[in-house]
Image (cartoon, rainbow, N blue to C red; front, side, top):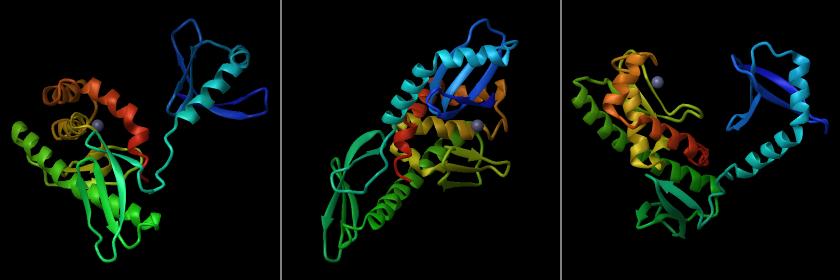
Length: 237
Ligand SMILES: [Zn+2]
């Protein structure tokens, strides 16, 4: 993939990914990352330019639509929807003179505090709560899979990465993004299995995918679900 610039008739310049392949026609696609153009390997720059100009109103429309579909960031207000292990829950702010407890009761995440009107404070407390739920859940999953594999890990930690769901290093340390605890259990399980499969294969080779499939046969389905959920999982900064 090569990053290219396209000047639209309205003067707007957009970046797009150009993917040259053995194919006959030009294909345009809007992904989470923006415009991707698949084109024949031997296409000339002017030919490509011409097709993109012809399609420019389509491109503009699709990009605008994608922007409109992007999930609004959290405001940390009472009544805002949240996601926890695939369940819709509601942020519920309760003014309290002394308590600062955060508890999940039914579908309500109750945040009691004298500072409920301070979004930064509320955000910090809620993120802390998510991390507290995430770590024991991830640790339990890792322990079960490690036993099944006959492997040992040297540690499980949380990560706050923006673009990675997990990692596994040569010292057998597993890190998992705390945001995953918002996702349905099968999606969490898939990511844990992916990282655990790296204990056997430190790459994304066919052998790696065979290990991953032995731990989590429906990984393709879960991977798609995770991609689709990604904007929502990133609502909380
Ligand atoms: Zn991997």
